[in-house]
Amino acid sequence: MRIHYFQHVPFEGLGCIEVWATDNHHTLSMTRFYLDEPVPQPEEIDWLVVMGGPMNIYEEAEYPWLEREKQFIREAIACGKLVLGICLGAQLIADVLGGRVTRNAHKEIGWYQVELTPDAQASALFDFLPQRFTALHWHGDTFALPQGALHVARSEACENQAFLYDGRVIGLQFHLEFTKKSMDAILHHCADELVQGTYVQTVDAMQVPEKTFLEMNRAMSRLLDRLASTMPGS
Image (tube, rainbow, N blue to C red):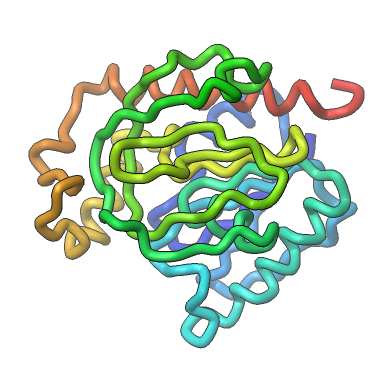
């Protein structure tokens, strides 16, 4: 399978998704918007992965490439591609599908529980996950659910944590792909975002055992397996 990913800053890469793609013999290509690289033609890819980043989806004046990124996401969905968005990526997908992106009532940074909705627990894509699990969060915005999307998950700080659209487009507000290296990188580059807040942990509180990352990454891999299985001919 031809997987293309959108990267917005050098320190937020694929994390464990890269390992999964390599182990499963998929091809990987990328557009690094921070280097103003071009996007492919939709017919050149099977799957689009849209990563996170510290910018907001409505900051086109500062990040003019957001316009062509949104246009490509719109085309990829219309062409029937598999699409996965994480954090900023989920917000971008929600936006092109008509779900408004706004400031969340709380900034949510750290390890917090996510709860699956009953609909998600009944879904073949998400039914392997426990009803409640811990994931890593790093966001201040939130998205409204696009019309026709399945509400997948919520947290105490943020009602809309994940959605599924048309059985093949997934938006995750939280991170399952982060490795210890990923977290160290974002802590280094975005430490200024760790302001005092009800749902903002300290750097020390975010230091967790390696097994926590491994468990989270296993969940990401299983979700990728499930999504890949929806591809015709898989």
